[in-house]
Image (cartoon, rainbow over the protein chains, first blue to last red):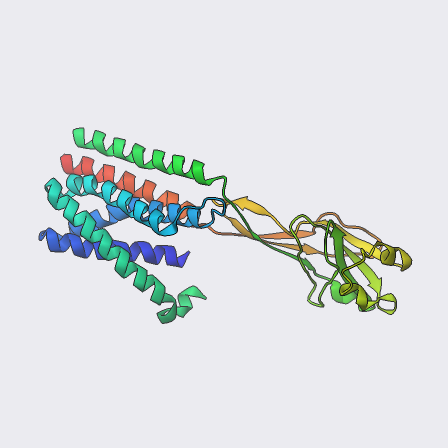
Length: 123
Length: 179
């Protein structure tokens, strides 16, 4: 359970960083926006991913499934970014893509390495 | 107002997608961890406890920790108590013959039957581990465990609950901002 919470918190922080780079005003609001946006997309994306891991009969390539989930997350986040930050479409697309690529890559490495650095969290 | 409508529609789309996806995935069941344990096995030091059942099940010995070994998922396992003096350990390794005749030839006592040692649950089910405990009596055949400790994984509630809370928070925030 703890790894799910860590994943969400890391994603919120990483995407907050990206929002703050692109939208250089009111960092508190950027953090709030990151919480709203990732609070919606991250748990659902994880749910699809972990449910699909248990599918034994469905022979769908895992890598492709991961890419599809990430693309859906990016597509969902674009209108949310526009709605909250009032950015133009192209900028929202750029922010969403960069935020998700960074959070995916860094999150992957951090989660992969976290059990080695914080073994007490993982029993 | 248009923004709120857009947001609600977006929310409905996301959760519809979740439902459709879950509908596709729900045929995916996965086995959960099942442990069967005899809690008072040390009350019977003169007995050996073995498991066996039909079809195609192995004869296995229950350890002194009381853990009943599982088997092929379609096995209908039972536990038998056999006096140590009558126990022939070669029955554990002899896979060619079904041990029915052996059980008949000695004074074996069936103590547990219908052991639930394999169970699949839908992936969204929070129950991921069950420990069944049996307190046996030699003159009685138990068909139900005395106790079932269920361990749940609440991730699924997190995956569904957090997005709902975030969406509600977002709607409230946008409404307040509009004012």
